[in-house]
Image 1: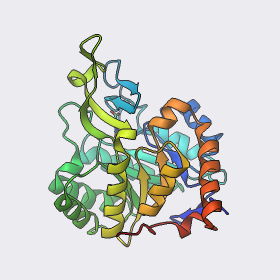
Image 2: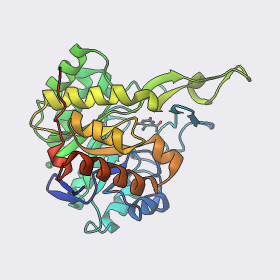
Image 3: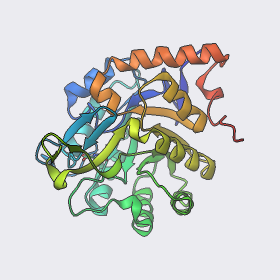
Length: 309
Ligand SMILES: O=C(O)c1[nH]c(=O)[nH]c(=O)c1I
């Protein structure tokens, strides 16, 4: 059996890589992902200028996952573009996550990435839930439409979008209708954290993160079924596009679920944060064992095979 697959014309030895934001803030973290058994790596969502982000504590792990309100801390897009320029693409593909604070910022950043003419793949983050005062774009369908019209006009290459979870069939329909207007949107990464959850410590009778009165994005076991639903909803509605699964992955079985639901590649967030880059060797082995046991020769054969009753 093989874990290798091709995606946007590039070869991935494994379908697994980090979720943007997790262990990808600077070149040391990115190089530890490069040295891992991941099939790829994605940079921390970047803005035009560097940001320190929200006050700490801003990430906390819980028995069932994690809560975060990082506030988009990053080195600024120039730093990640320099990393992308220096990257050896024969080792593994690289994604750049872009999360401008305005449409103009996204245009400026993707223009610079375009001009660098690199094999790097852009993942446009439409779903950051933690910048105070900035409602996330993907919950405003008109704003998302305007953003995609502007970015696809400027960035003359295939790119992807990082989407938040939706919870209503009508919203799956509306979001897919917008995305399907843009053939340049070649992939959809589902899901970002489940926004604005609240974790409470009863001993202290307190919230656990400082920003936003303790409200933050949820990851981990809590979100797996919602992630699978979003992967499958967009897989069904956007047959011309690929889907990258993200959310709740901690084992080979979870990856297999995402593949059945329609994912082409699979990102790991909370579990990577907690276990470290060594997780990719474990997950590759667990996934390969499942494929062997079930008689699949490649992960491509699994994609979208989920049966309904
Ligand atoms: O708070 C963050 O930095 C953050 N946190 C998330 O959970 N998702 C995001 O897209 C972002 I940009």
